[in-house]
Length: 204
Image 1: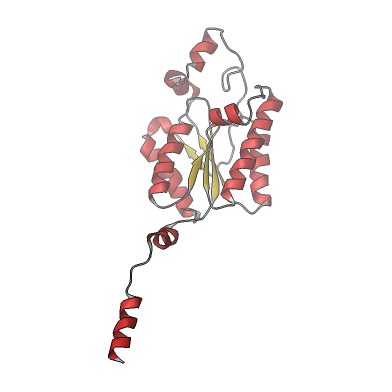
Image 2 (image 1 turned 120 degrees about the horizontal axis):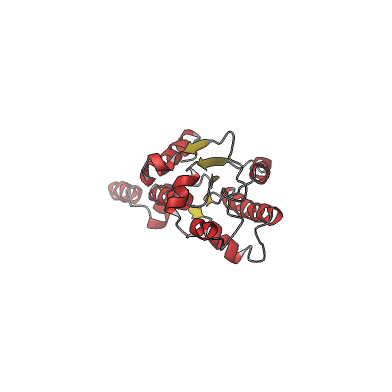
């Protein structure tokens, strides 16, 4: 009897397999965080900073980079209003698919038109999927100085046209879930602000 009791105690104190520990520590709440703003506003930089923070907490995270989407999913689209709308809807579809399967989808994409963003929001609402809109409200004057891709310089030189916020419209969100003035704070502070919003909504 004593031997049996000792064996039972030994069995109950055995460590869990690593796979089981990983599963239990894995956070599965999904949501889409759409970071909208002008070119060179800091959207992608903030998204990747936030992604690192969330992954360190056990979240599954994907960053849907606008340039990569253009290359692999929307290569045939141009920059007309209709094509921009189609591109945003494609990205919104992928984001919602990821989010409803437990992934935090971070989307640093300009999405210049309010009706396009609203259509994405409604898609998420229809599926009961969490959706947050973050306006990275960096002024065009600051963006043109940053000019990460050289677009503002090319537009000024007459090499390109249709640059959002300069000679093509950008409809800023009237009531985003969060507005970030990235020129007044660090990337880490901006990412922390989005993280705080996710925590407030029970998503992080």
